[in-house]
Image: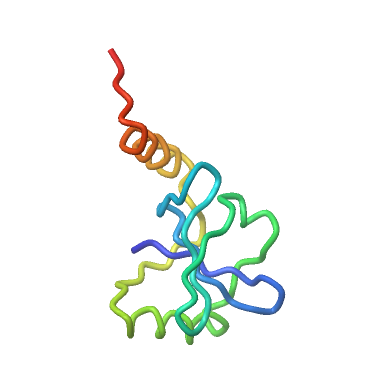
Length: 96
């Protein structure tokens, strides 16, 4: 799974940039099993974590079954395609 590691208030969080959770949110994770959601634009209010900073959280994710692919930047086109696809599924939209 693609994961961005970000620093938020001196805490490392894992952001799953293509795990859409509603209109404006994506999945995220903090230490000790704290799955949550964060705004899709979280990169604007956080800094990229260094490998040394995120390594413990990466190991934690791997210990619970995640196969982590660290990404530095979200591919916005892929994000929009995933968002669109989720909306189609959620609302059973059909287009001619």
